[in-house]
Image (cartoon, rainbow, N blue to C red; front, side):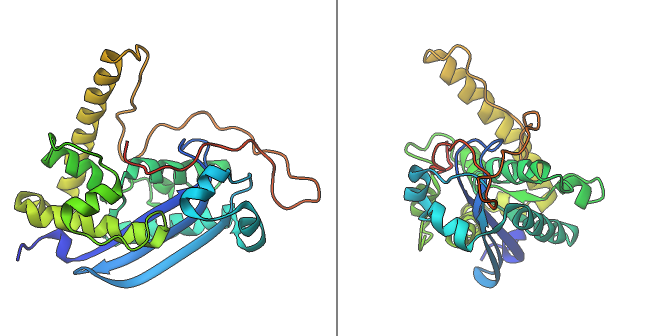
Length: 266
């Protein structure tokens, strides 16, 4: 059996959200799962009241209605703060965090922290950049660049023989991200042989190369102004916007709905 970072403790992370734009979408559910040698040894889950209506298309993906989020969800600021503290604690201990399409989830979390005037991930890490991060999507694109077909989490699970018990349920997706990362390392021993920090650095380069290639493809297909952010694992956030006004009667702020949080592999 291959030895390496994937046989030690790993943290899976996933968000289900109101939309696909990490700068404006909000957290609906979240999970941080602790996995060792393929077995779950710890799990934390959150349901947030995102402060804006949850679009019906998003509910169709992750199953959380606006009414349920208002009635059962915790304040978005508390949820974002606790998630960030959990991730920062693992990083301070040197434990890698696995997230499928990490640039989406981590950038959205960063936007939520800024939206609620909470300490950033970097601030929680004493000025250090968040990491190490394991993004199975980015790794898979690099090690099997020319494989045809989709690169969604579901497709990756099928490719690498990982059981996905409930797609778009945060706990299941977080666990699947870890298991797909481990399966890639088993299939490609040179990935397993890297240190988590070296793997993180490689992914920065791989993601930037993929972004450049995809941007070029989009432009060749007619989208002359297509721009793909090459930053990984955190994208550059747009300028901060003011929080929307509360709904009448207090409680949840009102706002315009975003598009659905579709499968996050682009």
